[in-house]
Image (cartoon, rainbow, N blue to C red; front, side, top):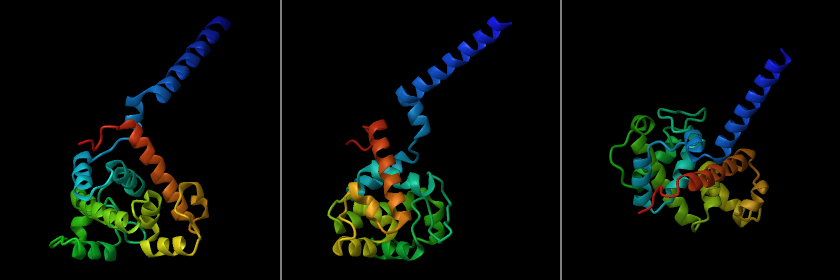
Length: 192
């Protein structure tokens, strides 16, 4: 009886060790846990606007986990969670024709294209500073510009804990986590 119990425990231990090794060392397991859906749409929009597709995918992961038809409590719409006023501004400035809020909310390709256009706008405004771009995507470019100009934050990841908004601080940390994870797991994603 004791031998049987001991055998079961050893077998259980070996199974656990095997699972841990698979988790830590297996790209397929990590890719299963960290998928990138809508890869084609992300790649096309990233190329259109000179963006790193890993960053676009990381923002989508944090915003909606690649789920379509999302509307936030604050009213943000679509896979990339654009506020309706921001979506209207993007549609006007980006010359997107006849784009309804319903289309942004329900069509991943439209949400990704408009979100990528907006990220490109932020990329230009913040001179390619990824951390400031991500913070501005969450808190708004005016707010982030104020933080940078008044010395509240220097735009670096090492000092992200200085961001006054806890939500934005956490948002930047999560996006950068997924960004780095995606770069490691999908090195050829977006390669030309």
